[in-house]
Amino acid sequence: MTATTAVAEGVKAIDAYVPQSPPGAMAHAAYMRLENTTNRLRSVIGVEASGYGMAHLHSSETKNGVAMMSMVHQLDIAPGQSVSLEPGGLHIMLMGPAVPAKVGDTVDLQFLFADGETLTVATQVKTRQSGS
Ligand SMILES: [Cu+2]
Image (cartoon, rainbow, N blue to C red; front, side, top):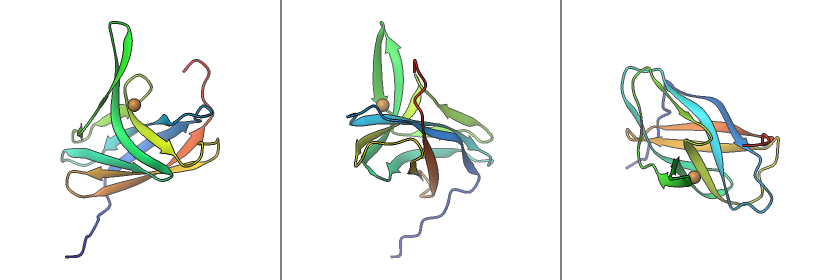
């Protein structure tokens, strides 16, 4: 059987960026807004990143003053809606960088959807904002 991968038409990644990783960091995050412009539910069930050993969808929350992260196994985007991946909330965790992410680099992220479609997003590495 031939494996065919279709591009996830109608799902857009907006303002995708990777804050420059601190020296020696073995994991850091990527952020963006994912918009579903179609009239059917889209579910992200996995993500891969070029130049990293592994990438996971994570969610951050603070419980009793302690910041915690947990795995997100499925990220649903309702028809016509968007989901924000942003500091302090949902994010893509990039783990095991082959080389430290430098400003001006591009990290190719590939999302896998429940229907077998994929979406590749060229994500820019940007200067880390002070305080974030
Ligand atoms: Cu994380």
